[in-house]
Image: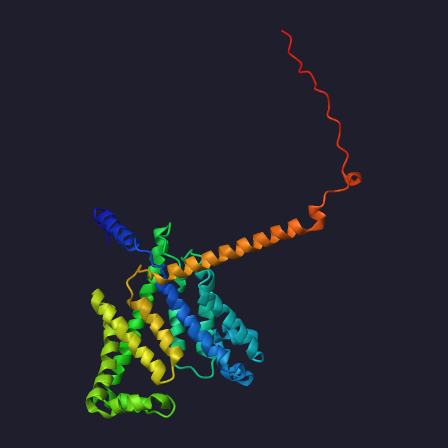
Length: 358
């Protein structure tokens, strides 16, 4: 089939206009930086609050674990006979992500740790699988991020292609988050306890994931009331459905309401069901998914100014200390003896300048 010549330039022009329009907003904001920090902090907390020898799969289990692509996980590379070393390396990588240093250099190691945790921990609670997906989709964003710290203000890339690559990664992540919440909502509709509005009662009274004793006097009366129980159960489904449809329905007021509702939902899960790591990771994913592209949170400007001011004061203090040490050193402060002074050559007499003869 022969393409009409007149249509080709028009298509190329429209494609170029579309690409230029989508490359004007820089995606490298402290919103996605905060999300990276939250996910890394959640994973690091899990690793630091559990003994290494019971956290990772055992050396005997490694034979069935370290196969295929899972053979590239951190534990399989280092060896599960050294669980403390595996944890130390993972926490060191996560610390660099938490402080926000050089996203371009830390994104791939972060994704490697998230993948390792999701595939080689003895017990996972769901957030680890989400973290490995989100960190994977953030690699195109971070690789094109030239900032020293992911807390800084966004700067438009010199090449529009970098912005398009970053937005491609964010788009893939958005589809993934939408799918997670859509499946979570729809799959519950076929369960009788969710359909009749009583599921929250059974989940919060479950022996392993149930609410702690200190909050039972507050929550139990709400669960025993049929109206509040139904509101909590159906409200959870409504929030999950709202998060899913936010991919296509994008009014700012709606997305902001869904964002805060989702945050309340996951904070409640973290407090009532003892899943803080899961809550942090899902809240981080919602931040990137629902916050407007290019939005910059003002709190980090103050943090950066304080950090730069502190670094400047420390540098000045070191310089003053070094100068004081030099001035107080006898070898530098006392003049050299005359017999140690080098001989000063006698100045040569002036040499007359030769004038050229005509």
